[in-house]
Structures are given as C-alpha cells and as structure tokens.
Length: 309
Ligand code: CP
Image 1 (cartoon, helix red, strand yellow):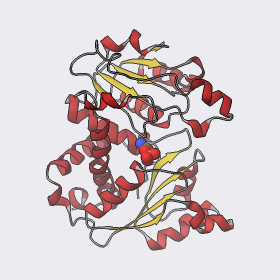
Image 2 (tube, rainbow, N blue to C red; image 1 turned 90 degrees about the horizontal axis):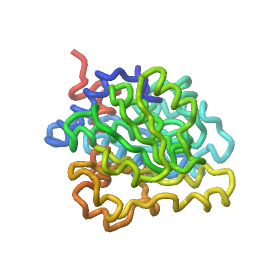
Image 3 (spheres, rainbow, N blue to C red; image 1 turned 30 degrees about the vertical axis):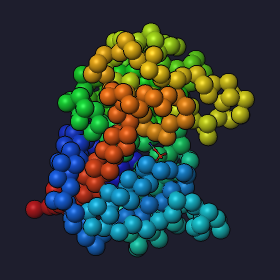
Image 4 (spheres, rainbow, N blue to C red; image 1 turned 90 degrees about the vertical axis):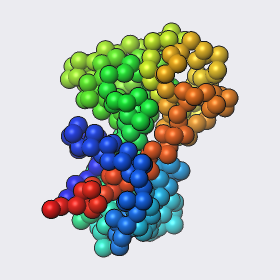
C-alpha cells in the first residue's frame, strides 16, 4: 500500500508517469469513466478548500467511483473530541482511499500510521501540498512541453506557502536550476529549505524584492497569495497583504511564451484584467488538477492504467 504525504514519496519516474497519464486522461476522459466502479473516496477536510476537495471529488466521480466525507470537521465526531487516529481507523472500513487536509503539519503522516487504506495529503499547515505539485507539473508540461529546464520566479508568501515548498523541491529534483524568489523580507523561503535546495540539488537561488527586477528573464511566474490564516497577528498580515500585484503593465516586458501560474485562491495579487492575457494559465491549472488526481487515485487503487498483471 502506498500513501502520498510529500512529493518525495514518489520517484521522479513515478511523478512523470502520473503527469503523462493525467495528460492522456485529459485527452480521452471517456476511456477512464468506469475504472473506479464500486470504489469509494473519503474526502476529509479539516480546513477549507475549493479546488483540492472538489477536484478530488470530481476526479473520483469521473472514474465511476463514489465520494463520502466532510468539508467541515465540526460536522464530524472530531467535534466531540475523537482523535485523528480513531477517525482514520474507522474510515478504513468505509472507503478505499482517503484524501485529507489538516491545519496541523504532519497530520497526514500521522494518519498514514493508523490507516489500512492509502492516505493522500491534500495540504498540511504551511508544510506540503503534494497534489498541488502534481497539478503544477502537469500544467507546466501541457504549456511548456517539459517539466524541467525553465527559469522560474516564485512570488508572494514563500514562507508559509506550502504549494511553493512542495513544488520548488520537486522542480529541483527534476533538474531545474534557476529560481528567483520574489518576496518581502518577512516572507522569504525558510532557510532550511534554501540550504537543502542549494546543497542537495545545486540550484541557483536569487532573492529579490520587486518582480520588475526579473520579469524579462523568466519562463514561469508562480504567484501565491499571502497566507492570512498562518499569521500570528493581524497587524503583520495587514502590513504585507498588498505587497505584490501583477498587472498588465508589469508583464509588458515579459517573454511572449512566459506562463503565469497561481495555485489559487487569488485574493488581490493578480489584477482581473490579466486573466485575458494568453500567458495567464491559472484557471487551466485548476482544470488540470482533476486529471492528474484521476491518475493518482488510479495509481493508489491499482486500477485502469495501473491495474496489476
Ligand atoms: N490550490 C488549492 O489548494 O486550492 P484550495 O485551497 O481551494 O483547495
């Protein structure tokens, strides 16, 4: 039995195969519409979500499976004090695979130690978001043709943004070497992660404060929102909340084939009129999340293209 708690749980070959399978499903979804017949996904969201929860639900339903679960833990027996371990043990009798999001870092890892069925981490605190990484990589492959070899700028809240933490490490594993880190001083990428990227993967990181300094050089702009829910006090959030806004003016000098990504939700870091620019692919990115999650569920359940024998 496999779990997906962090991207390192899968080899690079497995990740690229998931991306390629997701692209095949995207091209011919009808070929996969019955592969999860009789299977059940438990979707347990202890923290709010639109894309992760509903793209997983949609992914399972598009493969003929069913979905149970909650989007608000207060409607479950967690509210009565039940432990995560007990909840997970019980769900193993009711479902075949679990996707869970939790505000506490490490909660999905803990859950995997008590689970009789595969656990997928749908985001744990400011730590990891491995299925967003799969979503990001399938989007990059769809629009740029390859996963690696691009110059990437990550912009916004690099301290708390779990999507950045999972993606930058995975891109480095794939051999991407040039990253710009665009953020205010207070929201820089954690030092331990920077050290790992440089020491283990030999990447070149350049920290800058203004997007204008790098916009002409990049192939991918990965925007993130300031993660209000991770701040310890409101004043710090208010000081930083409008640090960045991508506007049509700011991307005027960008490459014509640069792509603008964002895991969403957007708050105010990308102006709405940028949506009409052909380089903006963040809604297609949300769309691709369904197909790569279909591939992931199939892999963990060993059905369809991942059936044994
Ligand atoms: N990208 C992402 O995780 O979005 P949700 O919080 O809506 O799931």
